[in-house]
Amino acid sequence: MPSTGPVTLTPPKDAPTTTPTTAASATPTTTAAATNPPGTAIGPAKDVPVGKSAAFTDPTTHTPSLVIQLTQGRFVAYDAVCPHEGCTVGYVPSQSIIACPCHGSEFNPDNGDVEQGPATRGLRALGIAEGSDGQLYVEG
Picture (cartoon, rainbow, N blue to C red):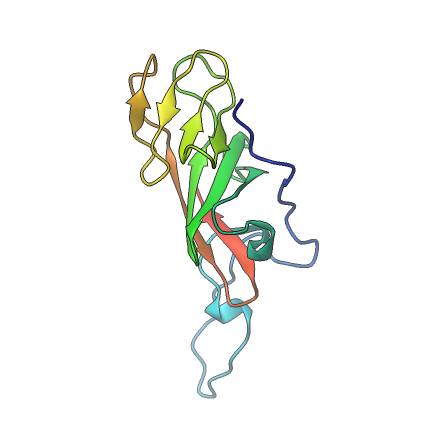
């Protein structure tokens, strides 16, 4: 049975929803926000151990989404809505596959491509990166 596990990421309350941009100034300054990737903070990277996944809500589309840490520091994220009939997929770490519990479609966690139908197209990839503040940032 596919499962994203018990972890659901929650965006930090004190973090900006998007990484701010600042105008150039004569005196350079360094802030944590300036070194974070673009996008919206969705939760702490530490909550997604290597080989595991976490659920989150895509801040752009408000749909169920999934983040997986495939190897140390290598995160991937996908829209977790199966393109076949809209069920929510989950990561199955023991099989290294993203699976749909409704009709058995399977997807490659490296790229979201269909490995087994009935889905005829892969999962929509989301840009994701870890910021210097330890948060994961997603771009839809």
